[in-house]
Image (cartoon, rainbow, N blue to C red; front, side):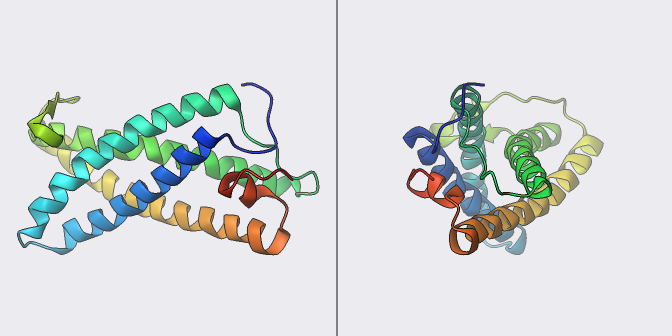
Length: 180
């Protein structure tokens, strides 16, 4: 990883906020999918699959940019346990952002359903057709969605804490790139 900077790059901020919007959309679309059996269900599924693949591609790009560019250092006066939780929570977020679309794709593959993107393009299956594997992956997708939702809420709470209470530049380094 390259040396850290005082703020995230414009590309890092663009990826962050784009993914934040897509992930929140996906969480609500997912809730809508399980809460309805009407014709809206098919529309939500048709939206959910390509958005999941878009998130997968964006998180891969985001990881590459993060590894190349690094991230701003945390404030010097931040307690060690908070630093540990901050780093751990980011690892959990990245892991969930990778896992959710891959598990969703695997789940559909195991069920024998294609992952249809816009324009009728189908992704190849990534696991064999297996009903028991499908059931396991479906449960994992559901529970990890709850974990992602809780992690996003914790991330938002931490961002607000840094922006409104500590006012230490952590929030502004992603919000507008202002240095500390």
